[in-house]
Image 1: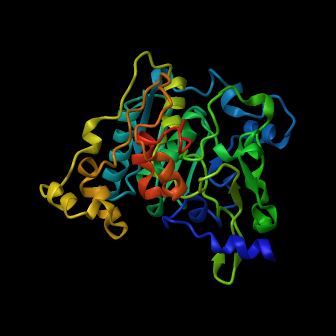
Image 2: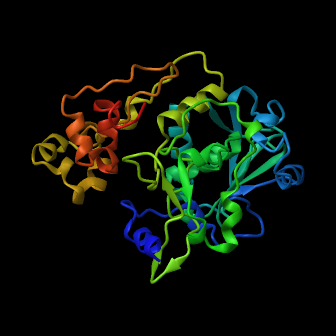
Image 3: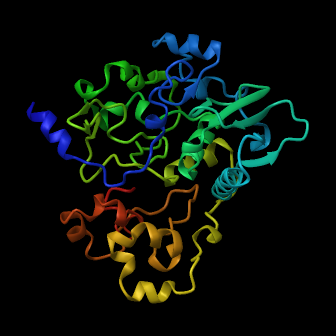
Length: 344
């Protein structure tokens, strides 16, 4: 009971809707929260010791999109406004990675984005008309990117075979009907050597599939690293982009477009001078209107390893006072205090 009380006290700092919540009652079609498996994939997943269990690695040619180009069709069920949300999310994904999305002409293999009953996708290219479901609740860029990464062939970060070195799954707090969502992938199926990425958009938050007690969701995953919280990851992390560009075999360093981080209001400098960038009450507004002036922009996503160093003499003080683990300051400290805050 002591541990349960502790888990109840850790509340998420950002309360955004998550894929696992939207799909919580969608049990017939999906596996691991939001993945659809083909019959052959399902058979492989059923054998946990199989050397071919990790789909993305073992189907290296069959499940790749040719030339990193993904033909797609957006269902006519979407309103014009909702279709534009999807298109903008795909455009933003293109600007960060080597993958391109093109409206389907006559291609045999293509992504069909449909407004069904949840957020889910196949893993990798399956061939033919390939479903990716985005109900109205799923129309947020971070959810669209998550499902697109599944379609490219990437699985969940918290299911890595080495995850127990980085997180502790609190099984007693997991809804018994959802235990399978914490299965680990086969150890011999991992080929990437990137460090465990708590900030990955493919990592569920620390309350995923938790039981509800006294109106509060119980914690199901606890980070083992210091100054880390498993909050809602709503942007592609540095390692997400690095992995995508490695998969796409990019030859050049591809940086995030400056256009993505442009201010959208002429009075941003004035609002910054009034201190609104630092006020948590205005954070979501300033993040949307004035990302450039407030310094919320992500550092360029480069393929090559950068120097791991601090650029501010006060980094140790920031860390002692908990700023490294505060999501509001994360983007700033990724640049200024990368070493002390453990971002490299």
